[in-house]
Amino acid sequence: MMMDYVVIMRGLREDNDVKQRKVAEYLNIDQRVYSRYERGQNAMPVRFIPLLCDYYNVSADYLLGRSKEKDYLGADKSRKLGATKKNG
Image: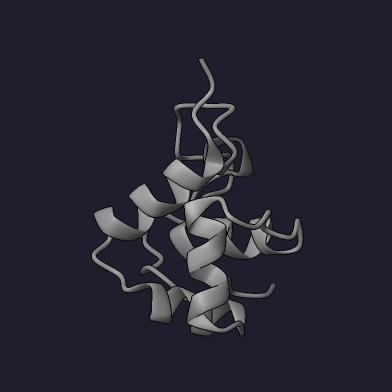
């Protein structure tokens, strides 16, 4: 059974001991808006999927509940939570 992405989003945030406000700032949205995404009250826009994947350094398949594997080909395991990807 596929896990709902809202459960995974919350789990990633809690596992990394991050407040909703911090994730919302990263996405450049209000914390209340992010809270609605995390509770499943509003559907999260697709444009946030790659941003959250980069933030938590997980694959889109993991975030969307299509895979149990967080890692993906080319993942930078040394990158800290929330750090932006290096260009080049």
